[in-house]
Length: 380
Image (cartoon, rainbow, N blue to C red; front, side, top):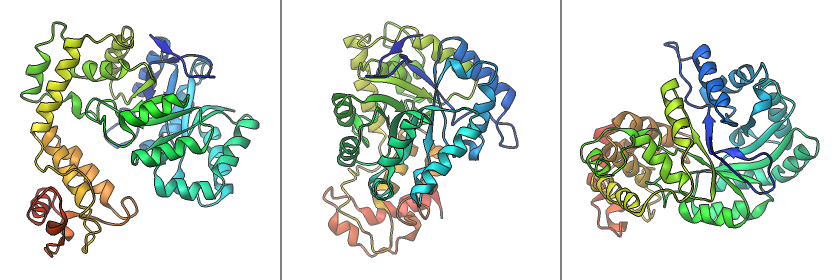
């Protein structure tokens, strides 16, 4: 296992982190605890020392599971990360209440890496006004947490503002070879690293879609002199960046754990050859060739009089076709556009064909017709 350094943090962290959001489950939907415990302990015994969970994962089962799985001396071998559920915070007292509950659930007296979960513009403004910075200072001072960080889902200007607002130790962003310009992206990665923050990466495989066998994609990878799995190509691209400390993988099988650990034993920064990096460009071009609607998410079409979140509808439609992942795209579509997640419902089926968006689109997209196409694809 290889390890990397975060400024002012001890010890060094394994470049592979064990993400506890996609643990194996039984037919009833609950965590398969014997198998999940075997997987987690197997990883720790082979050098993984960063374990990441969160309050809502597995409908609240993940933290208690991790607390049990880290018994028998395993807690002392890892750096434990979990997250304050920012969307549930309505008072300064809520922050202490959730942290104290998490300490009990995790059966620990201290959380090593504590993140403010899923920050964006609105959630950051709200939680800042409620006193998040004073809370983090006090939790560090009294020993309940060691290091403070945040996970992020919004645009780059919001990201930079949050980075500058507090003396963070680390941040967690979505990043993979298809998402260099998405949310914080490469610009945010460099900005945070330049400020001395450690970088933890989530969604390195874009929820698994980058591991799907798709005609045209595998043929490109087969041109490489060294053959690798689709997962290894994606992970190595991230580990090629020296700014990145930990890549989280939400592993669901012991086979995935074995494969990722093997990959993490030789993935040094800058280890990909120029010819290999060229293959990534070709793969990205092939994925983008499959885009159905050339929307740039400029948001000029918003607000829609009928409340349709047009850019997100197009993004999910493209996701389904780019990665041959209709089920995953539909699940995200329903999650992102339901009430409370994206400023109210924004489904394509709400369109009343007023035509306002067509006049506003600088890309010349026939948005009214394409929204009808998305509505027919995803249904009501």
